[in-house]
Length: 339
Figure 1 (cartoon, one colour):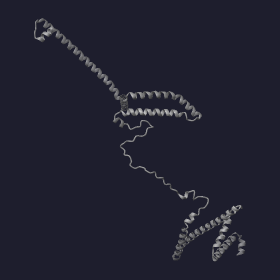
Figure 2: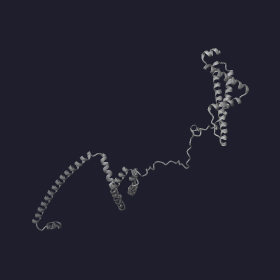
Figure 3: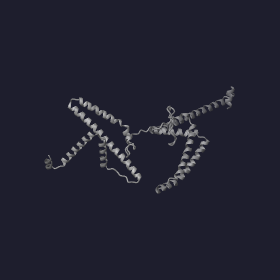
Figure 4: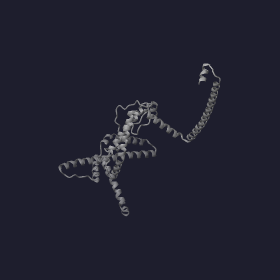
């Protein structure tokens, strides 16, 4: 050390100590070089070991699927998010919720046994109500804590997941979709379409004569149409067309006659019911007309409404018709004798 100080000051008193000092410095430098060489060898051997250790997990990572890596990454991000976002208040809330969930789980097993027994015996489900209420309360509290933790997260993470926090939560709609401008201001009552053909009013047991009065003009149309067909029959020369027109005229006239006969019977029935109603009020028993008596009365009404010549023609036609019926029923030998 003295030699070094002397070198620094530039004063050299003895030559021999300087040589010794130089020898010592050479030895020290050689030892330092040896140590440095050993350190380099150790560093090279350590780097080789590290490379070997790094190659082993790389070979293992090559066999892992991308799905497993993604799940691990999501789990790590969730843990970091929870660790960074939770504060003391949230930690206390979570601890209280965990304790409450443990208590509910402990109470759950005896209640499940009771429920099974009640189902077997057919008892009411009233004991289930308190358990459902507690479950709802815990779910609501868990949702509140989740909302508090999510509110502290970054906006990119909030917009990333549009899924509901639970199946009971309302569905979230994206703000990108425009809301319809149409609004139902006044609720208009729905129009009920009614088909009169299938209405109970029109299929009642008592006949309704209002429709006949309302559509009475149709009979006038039919009569005018018959008159037109008769006029056309006189002008037509072809036999085929004449036969066709005659059939149409006869069909329409028969329809009108049947309608008149039906109306006549209804009129007779109305008059009879009116008379019987008055008798029942006096204390007499009601008398119900048979179909045969109804037809006879309707026929007498028809004769009364007809003129003299029409009545005579009708009587002759009916006599001829009755005579033909009797002749058909008569045996052949008697029929030949009558001729």
